[in-house]
Image (cartoon, rainbow, N blue to C red; front, side):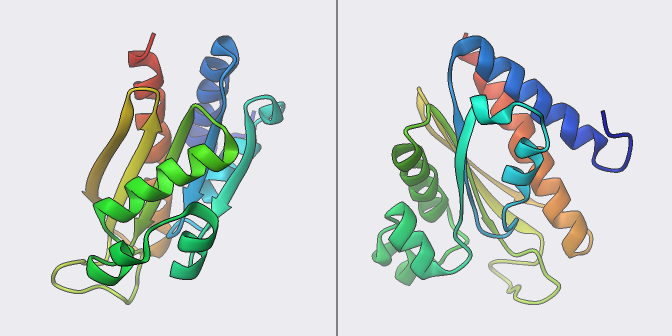
Amino acid sequence: MPQDATYPTYVLAEELGHLLLARGQSVTTAESCTGGLIAGAITDVPGSSSWFERGFVTYANTAKMDMLGVPPMFLDTVGAVSEPVVAAMAQGAADAARAQWAVAVSGVAGPGGGSAEKPVGLVWFAWATPMGIETERKIFSGDRHAVRAATVQHALRKLIAFIKDNQ
């Protein structure tokens, strides 16, 4: 097991895998600001192909629309870093991957790109679960690396919590 800075993330991904394997279920990811880091954390776990088939890196708005079916109206009216967009990303990923679980993230990792309404560190999360879509807005501090790392950890922690709550 890796003993470097990614160790806690690895432990989370490993726990996620154990939970999903025990249920015969799978997960997918839809990532913007993390650029595939959540999928990368998952695929660091040997055997993850048993519970993770694919993830979606949809950095551009056209990718969100083309790959995940995000309505253009959402992007035009509220922007990519918003609750409606991440909810649509999560549902679109779950549907496309035929997965029971999905996590989607869109945010402003920095150092630039922030605004008064959407500051650097803002991340919107959505989880598609068998019970429906759950969303959350978080603001993380630190540089680009810190924001992205915190996003990966939070996405995995909450996904694990939702799975445990769905016993």
